[in-house]
Image (cartoon, rainbow, N blue to C red; front, side):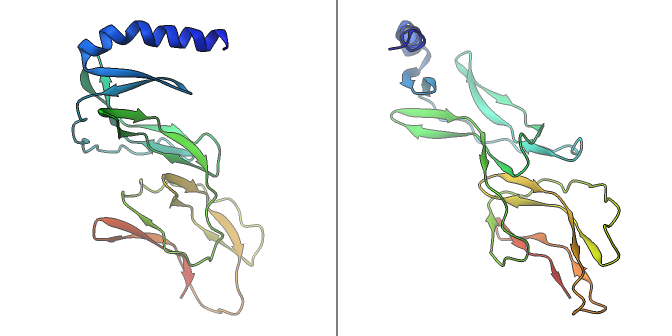
Length: 195
């Protein structure tokens, strides 16, 4: 065993008497100590999401955290996307054994589907506010701008806008931007198209 693993094990074992008093269990996980809280987290709070600070930011929603032997609310915040093309998987409390364990939020590689691919994407949470993009100069007279949008892939990721060549087989047609429509308690992506 490495010295770091022995130290983690000793730390976890020394905290066991205190953990039993506090209503938590401490287990060993590959990523470090795992805290199992015996009481269920309170319902999530409704947050007012402020305006985005700029392009390339995503909203990390707030969550309950177990601190000082009680539940404390951690407010949501805007965060810069770590790497374009990655999506954020929000953290969540999951049932484990006799209690609840916090699984940290993280980024995953999830490139959006190719433009024009007709796939019905359904999200269970509302998309963040649209990011206002600075539209660069068109690369030529045959190009049109397709604005950026939020893509759902287990978490929200911003897909930047881009120019595409205008299809001459649609003279006089107009581009209808893709958008999210509400369907019951979910949101459904409507791909952009010519009309």
